[in-house]
Image 1 (cartoon, rainbow, N blue to C red):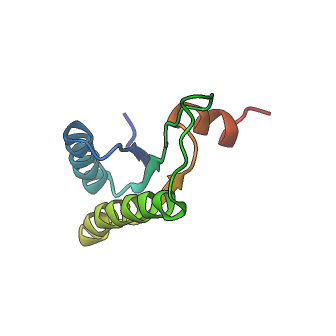
Image 2: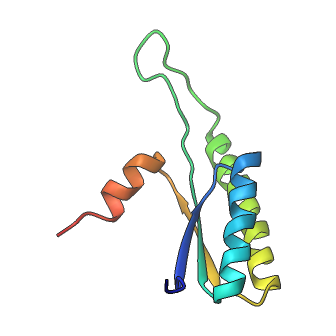
Amino acid sequence: MSSPKRMLVATDFSEPAGRAFEAALARASRSKAELHLIHALEVALPLFEPYAVVLPADWIGEARRLAKEKLDAAHAKVTARGLSGTTHLGDVPAALHRVIHHRPD
């Protein structure tokens, strides 16, 4: 079996996702694979009256900042192991991210 050259690690920052990240980090360390860390920022809002809500303008910006901060902390663990990688912060639900960004030709 060949070793992976690149690995994608999706996270919702939960405890199980943290364990999956640690397992991926260990595997990447053995194979010197590049790690791509992704989080799909999803703000579920009711869209129809009378349930529509108005969020403060800075709320989504703060959610993005916190998600980026957590991704950056995970990336720091990657670089501390001498590995390369990058982070990706999506603005769509995770299931749609694949459809939008990875459409087959």
